[in-house]
Image (cartoon, rainbow over all chains, first blue to last red; front, top):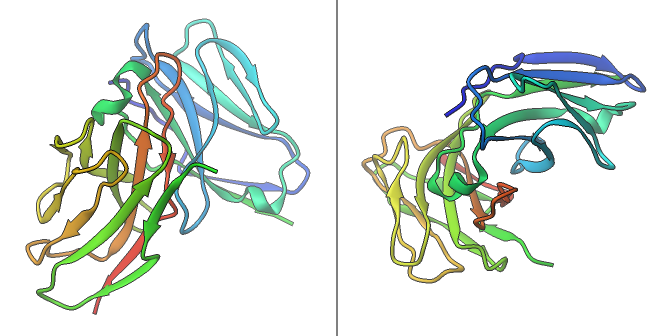
Length: 113
Length: 114
């Protein structure tokens, strides 16, 4: 399993772009990188997933360098409602039903007015 | 819309009691999971099930039990043997795919010992 390291917490202001970086030095060939968002007293929800280069959807962008040893979640123009915990997961999707994916502490993002 | 339903949202347990948390999904997902979350912590896996009538222990299974008699249902029982059960419990499901973890979570049950 690829261990991930991400900052425990980050602060930002409304309207700013936020970049959260995750390190995964031992990522394997079949591993994908996935980010989840969790609001207080709710379950995590899927934000974005990628394998290499850049992925963008209506919510966020995910940048993955060529060596894939890290990745950066980018949230454009955050609002107060983006205050949440963000989890970086790395693993082989084919093993996802074996309970092998690990949700670490995540990064707590606090957006201020 | 398909999804996962957890009930109740809040649950209070007296010392020495067993309580059962419900988890139902209509996503036709094969695998289901139970996680425990403590304040400021990540998610820890309690039990998971890949198919009906089969389940495996996760990292913190002691004091918990599960059953998987139907594909749609994966109830978790917190027994009196669990000495510190106060926590937020999350149920999830997933379907095997090669390109996507496909995890979907319920909205959680907050269990408090009184």
